[in-house]
Length: 293
Figure 1: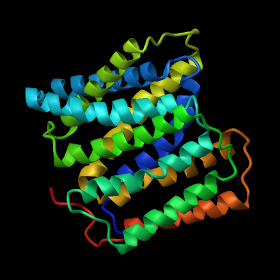
Figure 2 (figure 1 turned 90 degrees about the vertical axis):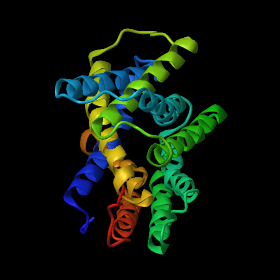
Figure 3 (figure 1 turned 180 degrees about the horizontal axis):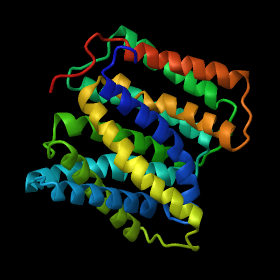
């Protein structure tokens, strides 16, 4: 990341650090919230706050066509991507989740390739190295899973990456932060509707810990990291924008060591070095990283 613009570096660090910690927050919040309601409510809250802030500042609301496109993209990225990931976490171990999420750069690369934009050789090497590092890091974890969890997680990855590509190359969203706000609002409403149609309900009282986790997901995970990710998708090559899928497990392991008294061995250290090397490869693969759009 040494040659990257400072704003790109800031966005990458936001996605790395925040999304690396949201798995823990989701785990805490799921103790009280049903999965689709958890994700839907966080994005409705985040999108609503951002939309209101922009309107107060004199922003222009999206047109009907932009709302339509925001609904399609939000349903894919947030409804399919985040909703199904949360659902899958009930049936699949964290170790296997990390490996599946590490497949995201491959899927994103294929989606972008449909529009004639393929990674260069160094980016391919970085993608493969990062995937290998993610497998090594997760190899000491429990790999248990139910078939429904695997299907949900695979579907989530496809929805997330397809929606990410279409948001920049197919659909016309409102410019800037208003586009992010409309996506979050539309995707959140979609998830709340799914929650209602599937009959989700609260089975226990919402604890202070669950409220704190939900609030963190709204402010940091949605307003901060999701906005940073959408900026990256529009600005840098897909291999770099999706590198969070390798780094997030590293952040999660580090947080476990620092705050949950978890142990780290030689395998984990080697895996993290491999993953960080892959990020270095993809971040220095092109002289002109920012895309002209």
